[in-house]
Image 1 (cartoon, rainbow, N blue to C red):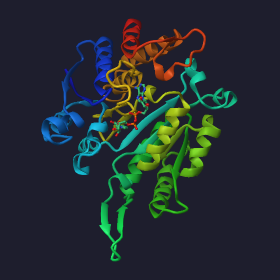
Image 2 (cartoon, rainbow, N blue to C red):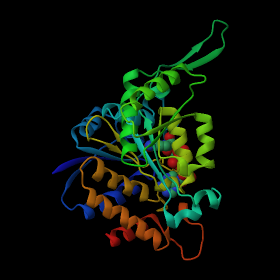
Image 3 (cartoon, helix red, strand yellow):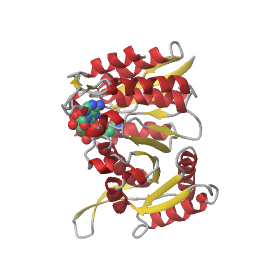
Image 4 (cartoon, rainbow, N blue to C red):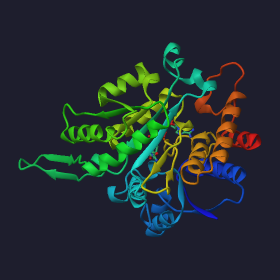
Amino acid sequence: MKKVAVIPGDGIGPEVIGAALEVLKKAAPGAFEFQSVAMGGNAIDKYGEPLPAESLKTCQEADATLLGAVGGPKWDNVPPEIRPERGLLGVRKGLKVFANIRPAKIFAPLASACPLRKDIADKGIDFVIIRELTGGIYFGKHEAFTTPDGEKAARDVMEYTEHEIRRIAHVGFKAAMGRRKIVTSVDKANILTSSRLWREVVEDVAKEYPEVKLNHLYVDNASMQLIRVPSEFDVIVTENTFGDILSDEASQIVGSIGMIPSASLGDNNRGLYEPIHGSAPDIAGQDKANPIGTILCGAMMLRYSFGMNSEADRIERAVDEVLNDGLRTGDIFTGSEGTKLITGSQMKDAILAKL
Ligand code: NAD
């Protein structure tokens, strides 16, 4: 039996994870042993640190890890070195996952939730953002210091090695080979030295994929083009911070942040799967959280870590069907004709019923 480490986390994390586990158990009965792991704010409360060594070890020994979300206002003022986000970065680093894959696809029944002009959305939106996850400014040296004049100052270092860029570029080109064969590499090569290296290495890797068309965009331009002509994007490859920002923009284009799963992969199949949303403290405990993003994480896990494509297809089809039936949690409810507002657990039950 395959082992899956499960990090419910904080806020709506346990709600959406509970839903995803029920769906996985129904779609692939008996396939997995789930081991619950403390991480985030709840681990700070219990163990005084966001990622206890035992938790990381369980994830490292598992065949895949499924994560809800961590953090919340309760832990906003804890010392930086034990903030819940440190646990998140720690688990990504500990699992050696370096490629974050975030699909941005418009679900036809939710087209009305797309904030873009109808003629733009009607051209279709279906792209993937592949974000480098363990390098760049988030993992560079962070320093607060005092200048010789006695003024407070701070710096964060953005650093990339050739090897880090090369391996994420390969993930992007390989993904494009299975899609429309267009890679857009996003950087800020007009200003940043690390981006100039990024561009040079991506161009070198591109030579190994002659069928794939490579474009480069500066990140500021990319953020504009994503809302102007989203249909033109297929695979976007970018560094950690730019990817963080662009993928949140993409989540709004396709509807709700609550709908989007993500997979983080390393050199083997032991991925980390997490919805792109946070712990949503504003709606936690009210049964308002949309579980679809986490349920689709389960489907991605079946596909990428376990090669269980038909089970993954069934889950994705069940999600399509409930949306076609007009069922909507609050985040995707626009009041349009034929739709019905339901709770998070009703959404989960409807998906289970379709399965
Ligand atoms: P958020 O994603 O938690 O919430 C943003 C908005 O989207 C809120 O209005 C929320 O109600 C809504 N939302 C999010 N997920 C939803 C869902 N599944 N269904 C319905 N509505 C949903 O982002 P935030 O408010 O910036 O952060 C809240 C906390 O989460 C912070 O402590 C932050 O550090 C943490 N966070 C954690 C992660 C993670 O664990 N991966 C990611 C981002 C933020």
